[in-house]
Amino acid sequence: MPQESARPINPAAEDFSGESLSRMAKRAFHATRPKFFPASVLPVLAGTAWGVSVAGSLDILVFVLALLATVCVHAASNVLNDVGDETIGTDRQNDDRIYPYTGGSRFIQTGILSQSRMARLGVALLVIAALCGLALISVRGPVVLLFGLAGIALGVLYSLGPLKLSTIGLGETSVAVAFGILPVTGAAWLQGASINTSLILFSLPVSAWVAAILLINEVPDIKADKACGKGTLPVRLGLVGTSRLYLTIQAAALAIIIALTLLGSLPLLAPLAPAALMVLAWRASNAIRGGIEDRGAMTRAIESTLAIHTVGCLWLAGCALFSLWW
Image 1 (cartoon, rainbow, N blue to C red):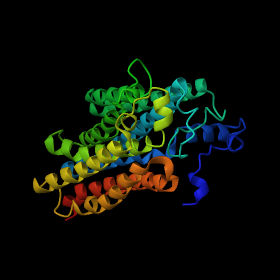
Image 2: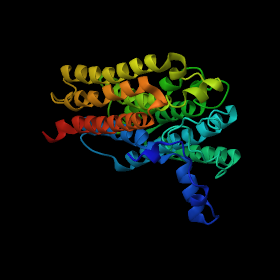
Image 3: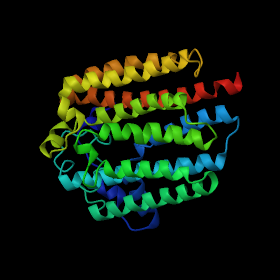
């Protein structure tokens, strides 16, 4: 990628100025960090594929509502994370960031949106998610409420409240649950699948891949996070420990897929793509050891991790649907 895109830059305020409806919508959309939406869209897609493979049919309305609710919770989490990070000051002093992947949306720091307006945007997105949840409750019953409340709670507590999970070394685990286990099992259940051991195992590689995204994105932020008392795992483990954990997470995803294949829950070729993706994971883990000193390598490692998640989720969705077509 061009070297200039790896430098610590900010969104251009003039690109988002103006009070027309289209300009306000543009600000709101980009404040949510849409580049990361695949992390919420693809788990729903994978879970839906599992549910369809069990039920033999697709409920499109339920799929759309589940997708919209999950993306809105994700968007709200991103926005509220910016609010929380501005409160403790980590984004403001983060000079090692790799925009647009790390260091937040930069909308507060550049004055595009105030902290209070970002907070209101986050709340509005949670309201939209709740409305989608109510529609799903009317179709599938009150169990939907459990999935919704768990997702919203993790999304909010990641950055705000008395816990601030991201500051006590539990942010990566909460993201793994909120954007892995919950959306995959929830989407599958909404389509008619039972929540059993096989489905939970199916959700774990997705959880691992999304946790790896957060983990590697936190590496360039180590200095700023440490200065502000934000105890992410990279802050606690250092570069070598983070590299080892990252590779362990990626290997665990592959191991679970192999186990599901041996159990007969996935086709024989299911481990093929995840095994090939380990090449990217190995290179990314090596880049983590070098940290932010090589910004180009770190940027490529982040993009490779996003690619692993994207390809992996799509591959799992295809494997889940395999039994319907062959």
